Amino acid sequence: MPPCQPQTSTPISAEKKMKMPDPPEYVVYTDSELDMVRSQYFALLCNGKEKNYTMSKELCCRLIRNTITSMVAILRASPMGKEVRYPSKLEMRAMSQKIVDYYPMLRDDDPNMPYLTIYAKMYKRLQNMRSPRKRQGSVPQRGVAKTALFSADNQETDWTSNSSDNTVLLESNDDLSEDNSSAASPAQRPPSVPRKPKTKTSLLPSASASGSSLRTVIASPTTPAKDDVVAQDSLKMQARHYKTLSNMYNKPNAKPNQSDVAQVLDLEFKARRAFIDADVTREEDRPAKIFEAYPCFRDVRNAMDELRRIVGGTNSRYIEEVKGRWADFCAKVQFYGVWKKALKPPFPLDVRGVEFTLAIFNALPSLFPSPTSPPKKLGNSCEALLHVLKSGEDPTLYLEKRPLSSPVLLSDGSTTIVAVGNVPVTTLPQEDFSDGMLVLMAYYYTLHLRYPKCVATLLSVIQTEVIGDTIHDQDATSAYKKAMADWKSFIEK
Image (cartoon, rainbow, N blue to C red; front, top):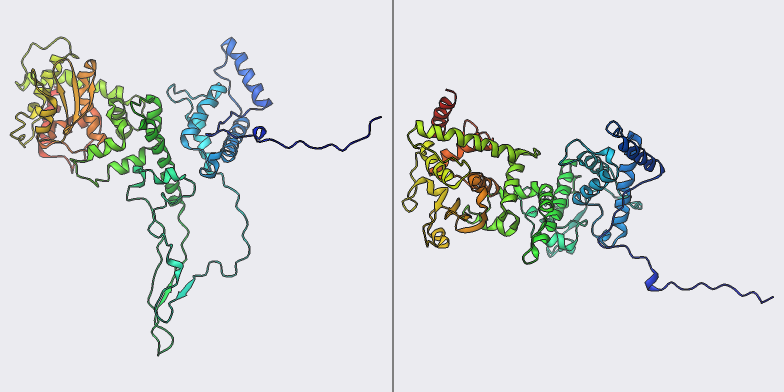
């Protein structure tokens, strides 16, 4: 029998150590009961009886609770866990999509967003989570205002040398990485971002009659309101979303997926509108600043989608409805133009053709006139909306001489350029030329621009009749009221 020798453990090499993926990879939670429910659903699916099958509330709550717990644990165990403590909304939305794909009985009726209910439950669960905190030792003077006296030679102590009273919380947040905090995100610029409470300095007389030393009192910071904390967290998350959006366009010739861009723009909407609507720059310089911060808006689809967010909200069919109202409006305008003697029949048969659209653009400013005449260099009021390029005319030279900074279409019959001010933005497909007015309105809303005075009445009518954005009575001009009265009286005949 060989002699017994003590067993020795083999040291773990560096290659055998487990490394968490970076970025983290999340998994869909499941257990035996959830798998049983899923198998029953697919069994009914084979017979076409799956419509009335639902998951119990208890199992759904367990799925949501354990999914969020798993995501937080995986994130904090990853290399990103030192900088980011909770999953982003983008990650949660992707997980909710995976959940409804794996558990189809949880889908919503909306085919465009079947995961909305699960996403809302996951986000509510995440808001209710609280990280455990280490218990502090006893502090005898906790909550008592601290005081510091100046020395006899009036030199203040050094405890204020590293003060960050004026530091915006969004930039000094521990939950964000250094890249996120140093990024030039427009979400950090709005003036509505709350700041840290400042120290209060009061001059108090000394108790002794001989000395006149100053006393500086540091007021204890008050506990921020719950709404302020939620707003700060929301801005921090939107700063992360802006960083994600910027990374999509950092690469040269980048062509990110349209649905991914739209998803991030949905999440970052509030901070973006606060930055754009702040009016911190001149209107002439605003488009260039916005296109620099958000190059995605050079795409007409993103501009139209932004119009939907501003006016239509969560209505996923808003753009289709607007295009339908624009088609009805043009159909009525051609008869209204004949009645006003601004159009002469016969009209082109193709209502989506170039000739019909040009005729509508030329007639609209005279059908809904503004009291202000256009600039002399512009000529006709319709030039504020559409300019037909002559043979051999350079669009760049025309834009440099153009006296207005508003959006405009440049067409030569085969190609249409969308420009804002003196900057060409993108080209419009020829089949979408009939919707060129909607594109102009989308950029007015996206870039927060004012209507030119020479076509303000026309664009206000389109705003109410086509876009569906009402104008308050106090903001309605007399020219707009008269134009709407004539229009209503005609279409009601």
